[in-house]
Length: 300
Ligand code: GLU
Image: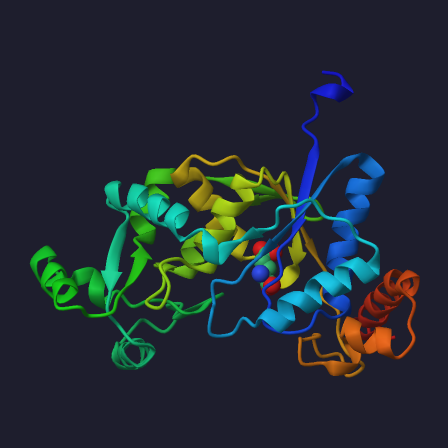
């Protein structure tokens, strides 16, 4: 195999416009962009705006403003998840035809109550990376009841039957560039929601479909989403999608050692820009924060 046989690197930044970008986002996006600059590759963007209740146009404008300030160039058109509901519906249909989905009418309160009341064995895991593991209330409903409740207009989500899905897909692995080969363990999530009650998709479904649709070969994102990759790998197998590699990046923390969030005003790119920081300083600042966090963890 010669160098030209290597698939070109395609990576992306996929922010949700729910707040201002901070130093951690800058680090992740600069990392991805620099890879495409040094190795020859494509840098794409995607606006993850399925959560319409939390997304704001002014945050989206700010994302593009910050990216341009950082000197990053992205390809157009930018993919926008809120415009792709039909694509997600088609994938849901395919999963449904394989008998892997079921409607769930539960509220969060129903789920919490069920978990509290059920006398699970002491070591049974009740929570996964996304919160409570669904205790299966609606999985037990018969087809007639499901159809009647849907016909009556009852709001429902669609959940993946994890046991069936894992059996169907068999054992899977995925590759993280800093951690090496990982054995997929999607079962730690339980029956994940793939279509929410309020919008007919979910983070896990949309991100998996869109990374494949955009031809992404390397997913770069924060370590907080490391475990999500188990579910994404499973969905890729079930939907016959190409499998990228992943690079999960360390999360940046503030001076108290608490992970940066969009509400940490001092670390937003806008605040730093307004305070006179030059875009060229941002990469070094991020690296310094990471080194500080590492030192703090080691008790230095
Ligand atoms: N939209 C997600 C966020 O802003 C990131 C999704 C991803 O990179 O997979 O946290």
